[in-house]
Image (cartoon, rainbow, N blue to C red; front, side, top):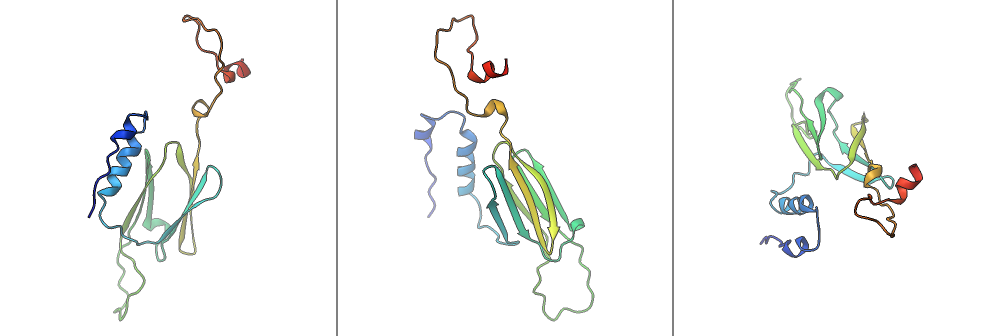
Length: 155
């Protein structure tokens, strides 16, 4: 039995998290997740990530990787090349599409395909204007803009 969470109390004390709440609501509505192809997500540094996906039998031309806004889409598909009659077919070769929701400021740095493993490197680049900064407390007139510590260092 699934019940939808009520985020109303969080809306009262948070600003700008609408996207996060929408993501949480969307995950509750997802159908059972297909586990093929298998993949790992590894945090390799403070702002670095790596997705490794097992795509045995797929070549570079069979894979398509796109990033549109905050969604990374990996598609795989191959043309069936029947070379004889299969008595057993255990190597999956069916088409797939896997989507990953990316946080703001996360971008794909590169992709590599070796030994049947697709490796995608991701990096979070937070713009300098978005990083935490110290705000001075002082006398400020309404005509004068607020001076930040970072402004003083640059000037």
